[in-house]
Length: 214
Image (cartoon, rainbow, N blue to C red; front, side, top):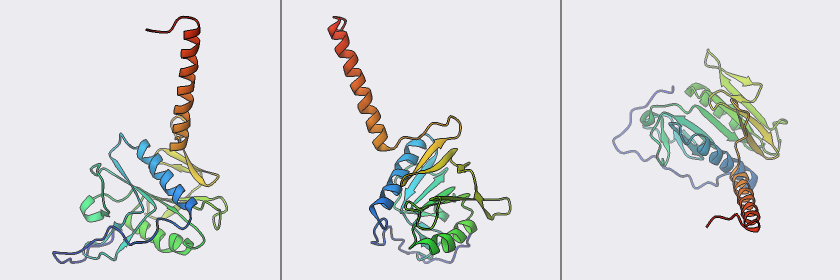
């Protein structure tokens, strides 16, 4: 882990830099959909999912920060965080996902990859919705025993217990234990609508047969 620097008693650690969430609407949608899916999937586990929030990694140096598009930190209290300070939370993010583009390629593949490796982030994933520089759209790296990132070739996140797969302009997630796909908010809404329509048709048939309940 990067060493802490001596810090004065009063240091401001901002929670916003005034910059937009992402370059395009599709990048925003990829970030927010991933955030929603992982929040639901991890709701019963001791994990917090962050999206575009500052990760401060050197105490006393508020400029030593990054804002990962999505990151998951395990074994910290489940609450709302304005940002995350490593020295306070005491846990390294287990996985970070950056929604990348040609404009952010150098930072994502250079500085951020080196930083996350040094911090000990177990998995680092890059998702390129438009395939601007990652032809396969999705690329993952996992720390080996020497603490060096190696490519994840099968799309499997051992940290999450999920398989990641690009589908159109989003990341789809499938459970490793059952193969079940995690449904997006839109898919969950559609499934609820379909279930309501089936229930209404069943109730109509029962009424027609005089078998409806009082």
